[in-house]
Length: 178
Image (cartoon, rainbow, N blue to C red; front, side, top):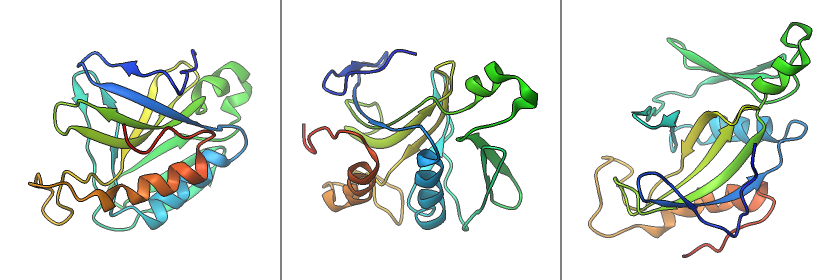
């Protein structure tokens, strides 16, 4: 899987431009990051796979239960749940399958020029094949937190959660403003 040079912008198919700050994926760092995010900030984030032709923008209404088993983080809401392979996994003894399933890249991103908002802030994970596992969107200054409607004027304080997580978890950080 090619690594992205943090200083180089990535030009997306829709014309937007993303910049990434890499997060170390060795050990349990990504599991700890997501455990903190989903246990303490579940009400503030939107998440799901975001691929061409499909965007799952999931918001939780109650705190999920989190468990780790055989390298998988399970986020359980009661009626439904999902699993992410974030740490070493047995995969029935198949080392190659275990490598493919486990998160191979994690990065905080800022995307400018999107179709819904001028800028979005998030975290994205990819597996060993370079396939997206999940995208987590952090609060946007362009949307009202209570009504989820577009604001007339951005509320820049809403980027604080992303800035805090990025400062604590990313290897190197991009400038806060373009």
